[in-house]
Image (cartoon, rainbow, N blue to C red; front, side, top):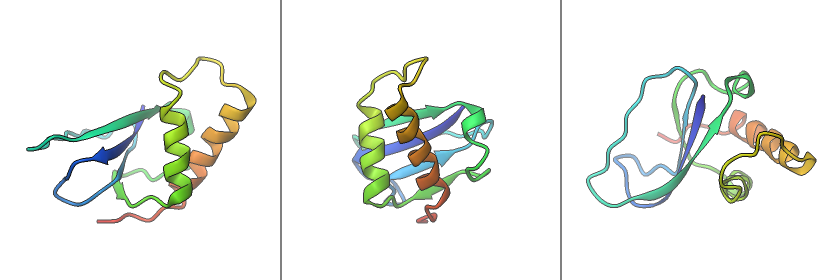
Length: 102
């Protein structure tokens, strides 16, 4: 699964807000202080148009809003509604067009 890590509060070595980790990429994270955030998991078939290496991103307003909405779903339902499918497509488009921050 691909992972989108959204940092809401806290501080990392590089002041990141969103991390992208493609499927199959080994990774680890640690913080020496309290942090809070969310992780969105994407099926591998949804990751084909996304970067194939891990990135740290500075998201724009649209990406932040889309991630907030998707994180509000809790667990992603097995069958997405039409609006949920469109929001997920927008998320992928936004991630594909976002530049790395660090």
